[in-house]
Amino acid sequence: MNRRTVAIVRNHVSASALADARDVLDQSAFVGRMLRESGWSVVEIELGTDLDEAAATLKGIRPDVVFNLVEDILDVGELACLAPAVYRRLGLPFTGSDGPVLLMTNDKFAAKHRLEAAGLSTPPGIDMGGVKRGRFPGPGRYIVKSRTEHASLGLDDSAVVDVSTAGELLEAMNGFRARMGGSCLAERFVDGREFSVAILEHPAGVGRAFGVAEIVFRADMPVKIVGYDAKWVEGSDADAATVRSFSFCETEPELAEELQRLALDCWDEMGLAGYARIDFRVDAEGRAHVIDINANPCIAENAGFMAAARRAGWSDRDVMDAIVQGAMERDGSGIKAE
Image (cartoon, rainbow, N blue to C red; front, side, top):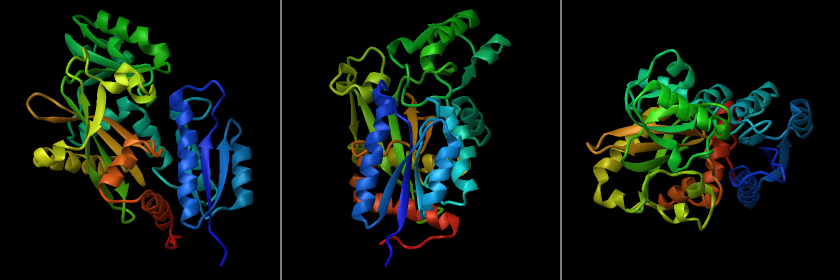
């Protein structure tokens, strides 16, 4: 019996890339190892600046399924939505969310509008153009974040600002724009607890929440956020001050259940597929607000998604098998993984 082939496609990573960009190499190695253990023949392909070259390589290999790990093209996160279009044009099933979904969720401002239209709570936000047109949401505390880049790019304590006027807010956004990928938005800061819900498509077409993790902030943190250092600089003070915990699920099961319900509402409303992670902030009144939709989130061995899966009783191999099986079933080529 011929072994089935999966092509792991990831973006190019330069020698000088930051930790968040290098992480895709760890993901690729981990996914490949798990799928080889499940009996797959694995090829790894780098999608750089030449989409024709990547398409020709895939056409020559003709894999049974593509495991999509492309997080950016030309170091631009919002271009990652082009990769699924290449796979679809070649008639290849692929893992994770489709291009239009990636385009929408990579634009945090567009995603916020979609959530609001669906009646899902998200902190009010405004982009720079909106402020310039006089749509100032009012005085108060805001967090300035990248509009189109993930991984907490450029985010640290200084990104949480208190402003009284539209001019002050615009000045703050201008100050962060370059280090946040060229575009940013300001969102009302919810000074509360932070949670994330991991969702896996299993069985195919059905999102299944693995449970909820809380990021427990150290009490002496002046600004309680998960900034870039907390995510990517292992051993830093920010890393030590933000600890992932599942223990609240035992003591506050109603809150855990509510967050999972809301996360699955996001899954359905945004058209997510494969796997996803939804991040929340819960305010002092106990109301949950969606702060980020992560389509195709990090699935490195030490990532929060895999930690949630293991806690729910899933092996690493079972997770990867479910992801590729879901992709093939969506495509109509759903051969059971061995």
